[in-house]
View 1 (tube, rainbow, N blue to C red):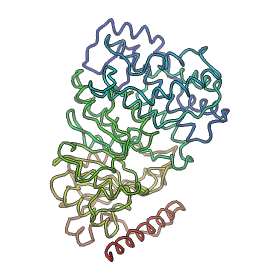
View 2 (view 1 turned 180 degrees about the vertical axis):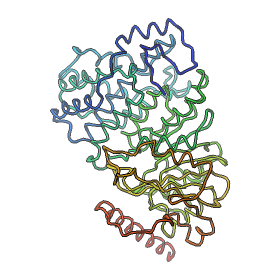
View 3 (view 1 turned 45 degrees about the vertical axis):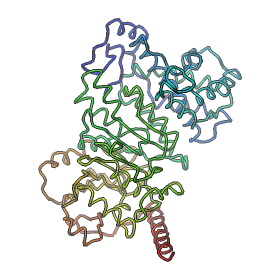
View 4 (view 1 turned 135 degrees about the vertical axis):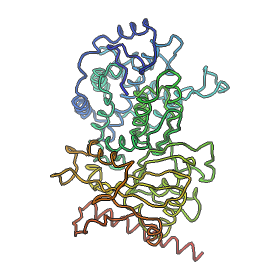
Length: 520
């Protein structure tokens, strides 16, 4: 999907007609849009260097959160300005005196202690307590304004760490060099996020695993969500899968304003952590989703049996968190035979439950979720009974470098009929390349052979299939190695050894818990 480019007169997706006067106004307000987009990585680097001068900001995590809310507020204002030009009736949910244009856009505007006082004592309190009712009704009888709810939730989980108002003004002025509405690069926001994420690697618990764009796009293209289908990512992070789904649907099906509204209503996500949630909402707004249907909260923190037909969706695309434990007590939402503290396993159960019969999904799972005894085996049996897991793409360990070196898999399945056989595709590294890295990430073109093979399946040295009978005999173990390749001794990295040790401790803990429950 191409973002709004006012200089080209494209104020709407293909097939949507907008009044010429509106375009003239929009072009007038974005003069210079044809100017080449400034280097995003360079601007982010400059911003972080400026912020290091402020004593209130300590470490990468705080710098990124600080930049996050500023970028979000600027993008919201840029989109508000666009919507005001396209509709005389549009009124922003952000009070005029709090809009970016009112206090930040003028490079010679408010600064120093006055700016710091405004942000801490007026801006944040007002946005954290934003009126979310339509029409400003205090009793909420007019219903809830979802855009206002999103903004309130974003700022409720965000802080202003900077203490020097003069440095804040420098950061704000640097951000004003970016005009998101005039960008000719449809991946502008992705570039910003990737720049931020490189610094998150050392940010402790704030760190997130970024799913490479090549992976999100190939998974989306194969599942191929279409207009009118409900699409869900229950652990959406910054919205990579959701934006891939939006682009996939738009290029095939969106031809009118009505189509765009249907698209907006059918793209759904949920994210627990405040920073990725904020970036996800902003990402979707930049993809012309006026009011993103994204919730800030834990998808797992809901009674499993309460998920009924009205909650179910047609398509799930997700890379659920793995290698971590869930919030205390969350596992009690699930049936006793499936209770575990491993996040990836509970997310798998959740996604099975949320998918309609006939619905299809593509998800990322680590090797640890494909094997194991006890509760893990029972979850896999439920998975293979409820769903037709027809394809597993085995990825090299280094796909998620530099964020993680865990071996991962892409699982493609449909719900409503049991698995009879699974095709395995072993993804090979490009010839002459020993691993993926930050400078040599996985490329989408590497999946071209997979797409060609998809509808005419044959076995070869990197493709094999396994029957459900074999899987049953093997305890529903899905970690099936390539039978055409003689396994050689391999050395493990320190990170991999630590991960294996952590998995071993977790399995021991789960076994002890099961024994304790049995004794009781």
